[in-house]
Image 1 (tube, one colour):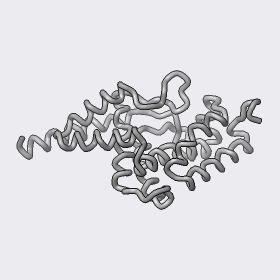
Image 2: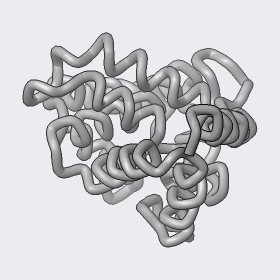
Image 3: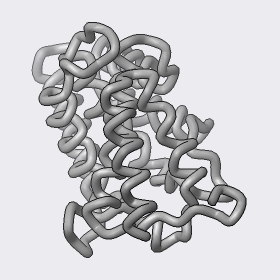
Image 4: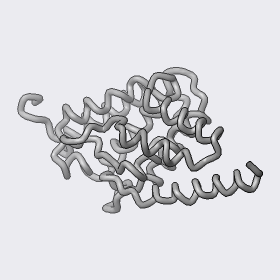
Length: 202
């Protein structure tokens, strides 16, 4: 394969991932009625990871964390976005996402394709310090958004406190400091009436 052939493959990939900008999430931008798209989400997470890396439970390779956060949602170009609190679909790796990863990263030259699939798999497995921290950042952003939007998707979809806390626990695996901060925001949201506790939780 010539360098020009390699370049053509890379450009084809770059063209294809532009579609991420059209994948709309349930969460809205800070203090806004406009829904966030996946590309905005990925960019924001990458910036958050750079700024907040010192709060990771363990030393992390920030560049690897950035790679994870920039590629982790690319599979949604094919598989679509699954709402974190969806009561029907499971918000975990699916066969559809696996096929999407193979198709999308497969547009790249073989070595790059293998590298990005490996990065994506590491994030999904959540077993390394980098993956745990990346998942913490991924889970923190929508909490910040919902708080800024007076409950946001919590209010819109009537998500109770226990479900929010259950989904927030993963933050602790990557950063106890960020988890403690998120827990404070969640508890304060209950006090403000923008996150409801079920009768059994009161």
